[in-house]
Amino acid sequence: MHDVIIIGAGFSGLEAARRLAPGHDVVVLEARERAGGRVLSHTFTNGDGTDLGGQWVGPGQDRLYALIAEMGFATYPLWDEGDHLVKAGRLKRYRGTIPNLPIPVLLDLNNALSRFEKMARQLDPAMPWTHPKAHIWDRMTVADFLRRHTLTARAREMFTIGIGAVFCAEPHELSLLHALFYARSGGSLDALLSVSGGAQQDRVHGGMGGLASALAASLGDCVRYGEPVQEIGWDRDGVSVSVTTSRQSWRAKRVVLAVPPSQALGIRFDPALPSNRDALWRRMPAGACIKCVAQYERPFWRERGLSGQAVGGNLAVRVTFDNTEKGKDSGLLLGFIEGEEARRWSQVSPETRREAVLEAFADFFGPEARSPIDYADKDWTSDPWTRGCYASILGPGVWTTLGPDLREAIGPIHVAGTETAIHGFGYIEGALEAGARAADEVAKALGR
Image (cartoon, rainbow, N blue to C red; front, side, top):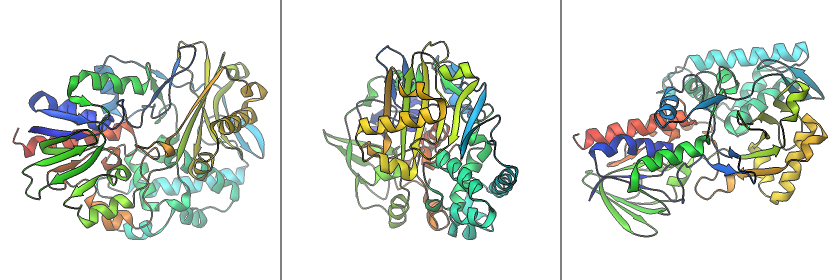
């Protein structure tokens, strides 16, 4: 019998294993044939690499910066020089976080953002359901908030694009309380949307996928790949747990479940999950995201004084970044398809989607963007072990009725994953926090 079985070799599961392995007999079971979960490396034909999953690290994400340094990796800033582009009718240049829009629209947008940030600052991210207005805000959607606190359609459109960029969801899908919590958990909505000084500030040489692989390798042969868990048998007294995969059965004193809630529901529990936990996980679907990267011989947009950051338009991609790795000659444009658009473009052929993405890039950066030397995308909604990104979304009523169960252990089964984080919910930073917290719970339970 092992001391601990950790289910999932994403950053949360790997962090739990890293903390527990020195004093415990640990096994990590991963369904995929790789580590990393929602991070994924891709190598282009010329040998250059990119991340098709989570990739950024920014101020306040101290756990992730420390891990990067400990594993011998280095960071570099995302390209943030030059003018950004906004397409709201016609194409305009701007600097800073807020696009260049007509003064009435800017005032309207700023008023809504300021109100949102003020409300978010009032929350305790460990217990957002305890705020005096939690039930009111949890009955509302972000769309309700926008209807009440914006006057112009253009301001609502820009706010909606920002919501899509952060949540990979539409405003009507999100509880207002969840959106406020998410912003508070990440510092602020402004920080989550910003590059320099924000959540998109830095990238990792070798990629986040490379960092995950190195972390898994440092744990030795305790990480087992191609072992999708089918059943967890547990007793309410917490004496032992049995875990059955598609290959074999395992036994342990404790289990750490470090997979997205929607994936945890694919596991059979015996006895069945407590009803509240089952209801909670069923109401935590993943956001919808397709991440697209086009490779060019050079970052040609920089020659025109552009940063590669663009927002707006009515095509498949409405948010872009310059994803070029520092020190490389080839230029990379990154675009996201999110929310309802991601669900729509997930249904078409990869070739059709590629053409739509390149057309969107050309709409921002000119005809040269239609002719990349290579291209890759990742439809996370169709990934069988994720079914969406970046993280779970919570609709109206979930936090105030079921939120207190989110981080609680289920007998001998402890829960991790970025969806259980207090700080950095939805980010790798949150995954590390949750893995560390679950490891501490297990160590305490085992008396070590």
